[in-house]
Image (cartoon, rainbow, N blue to C red; front, side, top):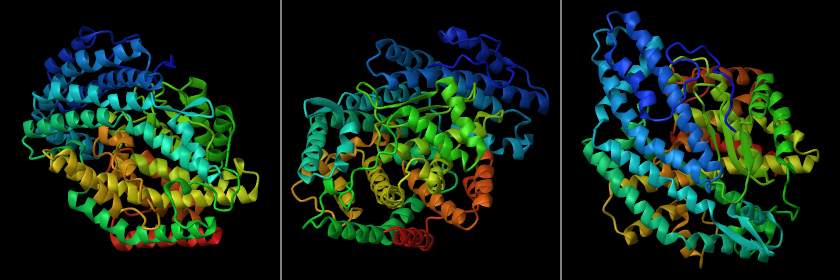
Length: 572
């Protein structure tokens, strides 16, 4: 799968043909940067660019190692290569990165660096210096290695259906089938299978929690929540803003979902709406199947995104040419989906677990939005300018889901199927918001209360889940599934606190789509302009470039919720 193409720009510091084998192969470059004399502002700028070139090489090498273990979790050689990078290379890299960060901030020309070009970069470097502690290098390595256990555990989960073993992703598509008894059985089988690993997952999380708390203490923080906010570089909003987000979702979005679920219950003519009733068509029609093969998914997606802008289709063709796509669900493949930026050669890698569902189509369009972002920021010389914050990265991806909706006739030649797909998309755009609030609020509690007992954790989870669940959905008798359903959320295990960004970006995506309904051409121009900024401006300014606000107030959320509600009424 690895691309053999030469980098998209001429390397100046790293010689042609360089590859990473062991620490010694990298050390000489770090030593040169650490020892180099910097006697002018131009010297400092060149030093920064050379350092970024080295980081791009290392970052891409590590990315390929991660891609390999997610594509095949049973590949022992790939796992060994990944673990070697984390155990043997990353600790040295982390130590040198701190050394170089200090060399930069202490340089006499540091404050003279042009803010237009280096402002965000310098802010990030100073932030990294402030939270660094040598003791956290081995701890962080342990956490990164251990966290990958979550993906391995879930990649091995299958259930038997009609004599066949299915991944949980494939089995999940059966919850769209019309036979209610069959759906109930599948729902219970999936959740029973997850419960088999509850003990392992609980122990895994306990270990991660303890180590993360120690990381925070080492860096002189009271808890990992506060440390993580600093480490993520959340300069543009605070903890209190997250709680404002929860409040807005609870008051302005949940009531709309209650209405939609009440409508679903009546249309299905059931006494109570159960979790296995949430994905079936309310009029008893067959599940939507927008594609039959991965080739069809790709070709139809190319046609769809090209209608927004020709460059989008070209980007996907380039990923196909480079073989930077692994889309189909299979046993041994880790769950989830991602777009992996490759900072040296430029073209990213898209990974996902598609079967042939509407959600798979939506996921691919989502990850394509990330990929377009990677292409649009690829010419920046600073890695920081390309490494966009998640609040912006997810805006690119979630917006692509909504912007393409008017062109989904590529996937659905039947007008009624197209209408159903749009309804599903708009409902999903709202449904994700309470779940984001649930996961994020739970994480705040987990890490501010690190000495909690298993019982306290379970009770707190159930209370938060109930707070943000639609009262129209009946889960009576299913509590034991609900108690540990958060185990499915990879982010809690692998990338803590990376989740509220989905909610913030979803609000932004709805706002961009609202703008698109009024002025399509201008909106696409704004969208591309915002993505091209990468991370060269604060988050609020990037949202402003897209023509929208970075806002979580109840009034703003109510406005966006009302817009979606009205659009749904025209389709229902």
